[in-house]
Length: 154
Image 1 (cartoon, rainbow, N blue to C red):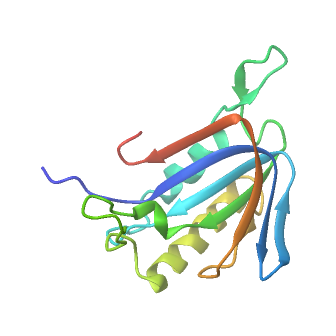
Image 2 (cartoon, one colour; image 1 turned 180 degrees about the horizontal axis):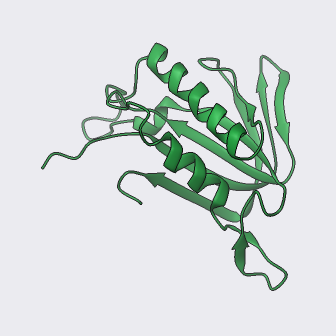
């Protein structure tokens, strides 16, 4: 059976994060999560519901005993959502990655916006990057805690 490559997210627990485009701050959050969203060429959006819900409900924040037991929603944290096609880098051949498995921009933008809308409906409107722009993201990874979710990790 051939593995279907679909949507992938990287979640980082942050105490703060900000995103700049052209030396201008576009988005910033305090305590919460930074979600890097990768969309593959074979994506059809069917995983948006599951991934968005999982990101919001993932218990990666410490409770009063220091145990990771609270979600971003539980702590009333913020969310920064950034589209990142480089999550589909193929580095098997040579030293220069190719991005053949990443979705084309038109499709990726549509699914990125759909993902943001799901986050908003389930919890709150996320702060966002500018799709296709060269962005600089500054963050303080709290823990550090970084979780990767995709169709192979459910």
